Image (cartoon, rainbow, N blue to C red; front, side):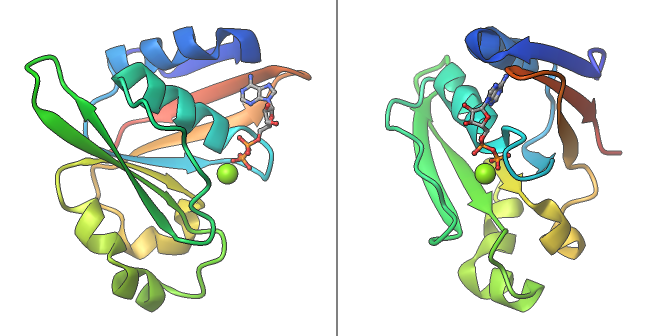
Length: 145
Ligand SMILES: Nc1ncnc2c1ncn2[C@@H]1O[C@H](COP(=O)(O)OP(=O)(O)O)[C@@H](O)[C@H]1O
Ligand SMILES: [Mg+2]
């Protein structure tokens, strides 16, 4: 990944999302950052950038949300958005189908990935979000091997 950092104001989040997709490779993205860092907000921008039209709702209670978009060739593709915050253990994640999603080849955005560390593919891209001011956030990307 040749752009390991992206810093943006809330008003620039859609440009930041475009930039992310220019450099992102792979399907599984693990979003690290404290509560309120902006994980869900940035994931929503990443979905908009792909052309997802339905609003992103928090998967905190359902664990996994699924969104559809059409790629440049007109094929329907899926994005899975998962929030592991309330997860008890990896067993619960397996039962909810988290592992199936992670290895499906579809784009997966995982919040609180620490809770499913043992289930993440080795080539997952890790994204670290931190506050860089009131409306500013810093993203650091670390591509998996
Ligand atoms: N540059 C920014 N990027 C993302 N969120 C921002 C930014 N600036 C301010 N915010 C605000 O910070 C909050 C982030 O909340 P959320 O995305 O739910 O965080 P998390 O999912 O990490 O707990 C939102 O209220 C959002 O409007
Ligand atoms: Mg969140």
